Length: 109
Image (cartoon, rainbow, N blue to C red; front, side):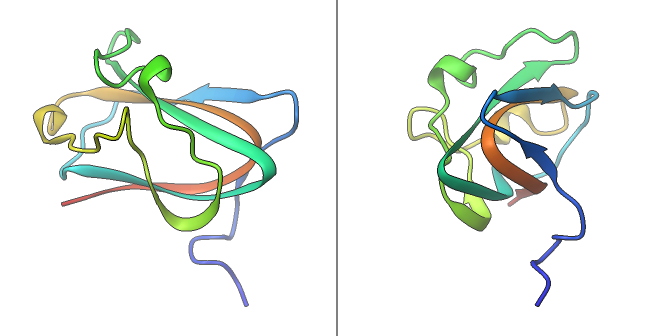
């Protein structure tokens, strides 16, 4: 059986990969990843403004690691997940992945 939204993934090996999205606007309050981290894998997400500067409260240093295999893994920063103050603003998502497969990300209300 095919994984939900699992047709294609961005795969990172043990050397840690990273990428940044183009600026995007979102509606919602929370961010979820469809991700499969191996036993030693992990992912971190940073939010950046449209110029690529980290947004306070949502930096890599504040990001909680995601280290499981979930179709809806919540993204949090020091336990906080509410992004409503950033909704409808152009932001970039920056990812750092190691031994992980990222299938999709989604903002929800």
